[in-house]
Length: 212
Ligand SMILES: O=C(O)CCC(=O)C(=O)O
Image: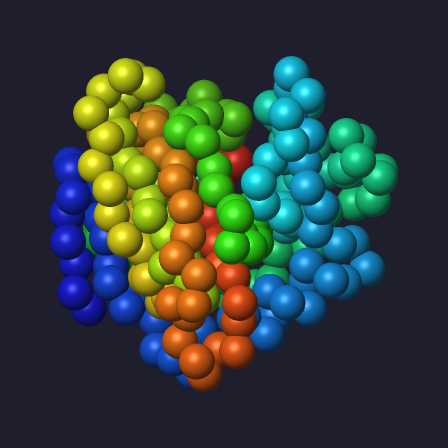
């Protein structure tokens, strides 16, 4: 596997997933976002609407409280669907390929349409123990290419732009765990034709807690 270390603790794995694997994952993501507990557009603290459709698996991230919970109390009260075992296994394998460990118990699945984007932010709502241990966030991209922004530990630090293409993994843990990141835009029409997907799915796997 091709591994590019973009910063200490941050790794880009271009084309980590085969096209067959991508297709199977896209089918599963489609079924999930339009399933019994569908994806929705979160309204965050302060009233802004996010520019993605989101579905959390394993644990729900509440965009009003910036905290995890079992049910979607900021939206419809439904329980977060379970995290499929093969999703968890994929996250573990990706983490291991860069020498990290991850026993993911939640995944935030986002769908970006042609106008989708996500502002610079830190992933810091997991437990202090999980973050202090540097347990990584494993991100998998499917479909249209994204212009992914990867900054430093402070919001104003310089930001590098990476293109995350379909099948790429991006992993940030250890010293990079709290780096700011976001998506400035996607590039419509760049998804592999075999996926028959207009838009982009992104899955970020995290481990809520860390037990010694
Ligand atoms: O879509 C991406 O590549 C990034 C997603 C992200 O930053 C997040 O879910 O916290």
